[in-house]
Amino acid sequence: MKKFLIGWILLFPATIILAQEEPLTFEKAIEIGLERNFDVKIGVNEAILAENDIRIGRSLLLPTLDANNIRTYRREDTEQTFVSDPDVPRVIDGAETRTNNYSLVAIYGFSMDAVVALQRLGKLAEVGELEAKVTIENTVAAIATAYYRLVLEQQRHNVLQTALELSEERVNIAKAQYDFGRASKRDFLAAQVDYNADLTALVTQDQVIKNAKVNLNELLAIEPNKEFVINDTITIRENLMIEDLMDNAYENNKQLLVNQRMQNVAYLQLRELQAQRLPTITLNGAYNNNYLRSEAGFLLTNQQDGITLGATVSWNLFSGFSLNRRIQGAKIQMQNQRHFLDQFEIQMQSDIQRTFNVYENSISLLDIEKENYQVAVENSDIALDRFRLGIANYLEFRDAQVNRLQAESRLIEALYNIKETEIELMRLSGRIYFQNPYEKVF
Image 1 (cartoon, rainbow, N blue to C red):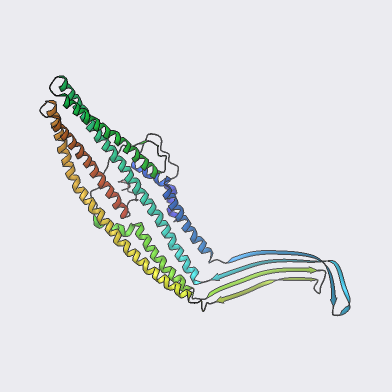
Image 2 (image 1 turned 90 degrees about the vertical axis):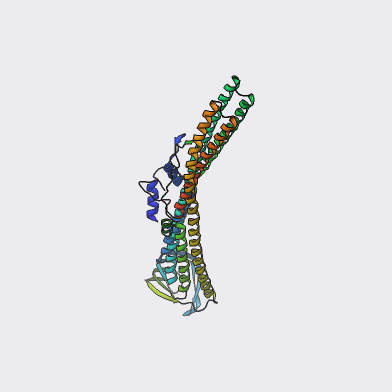
């Protein structure tokens, strides 16, 4: 845990501030998010608290030592009658009595259930650290998804911008043809309507980009109106293998490791209860220094100085069967934790398999969309040339233009879908947050 926190401090030594209109790379987005995201901060603090519980548990195995000093003073009017002279009472006005007591008291209690409890706290501390890492991985995945969603929306904006430029060129051609009497006003107005529709789509896309930036800013824990520039493309990996992903998941999936640790915790909880059947040994020792001075009574002064040692062995013989019931409940809880672990393993395997199926299908669709996009661009260019020459009407040109827009939109959507499934596969396999000098976080 200490190494984990030290590494955390070294990784983020200073506060990162995103300047207005500053370029935001993917690596910097991850860095800012890990430093500022509140879920990450809370997760790290929870891990620190779990580590602190271990220190508290260790203190229970150490002896306690108390130092005491008691001073008393009494002033009383005293009348005393002694056996030796019962007829003559002794009267003392303002008799003073002073006592002074120094003591050092040490107590040490040992029980096996405390030792097992300390082991259980150690496993819970490991769970706390793993859960903090789960939060970090989920945050990285969320930031990555939001970042590449913004890249997708910007690329879609570029597609719509290209479509608008084509529509503007069509309006200019239609107007020129109308001015020279080669086309009807209806063709010119139809071109104007299509141009306005494309302009509306572009303006709407501007709003989509603004909201995508707000979503990313929220994950980075910065102001929603903070502006930045992203000049990035969606890059994908096409070498993922299901066998490697499964193997990595069993070794590195933090949630799986959490469930494994919780099974250990349930086992130690059972042992802790069973250990309560064993005797408890308590050792105690004290050093005392007492001094008494009194002006009345048989004892005028008294000085005591010495040590006291003792030991207590306690063994619970009967507790109303409550301990037996608690042990029985702990056994059931241990069985349930085993079921939770088995259930999560099946769920993890299913999630990886489903996501990998989508990943493979998206890879196949990408090749189709690439080819379709090239055909659509070529068809659009031919339709534009034919429209300039007056060979094709506006319906043929618009149809080719829409086909190109849809083909390009599907292409970048396919790229994003692959990236999204890639992020999820990396998260499920526990590989989303490793450092590789030749790759990005993924």
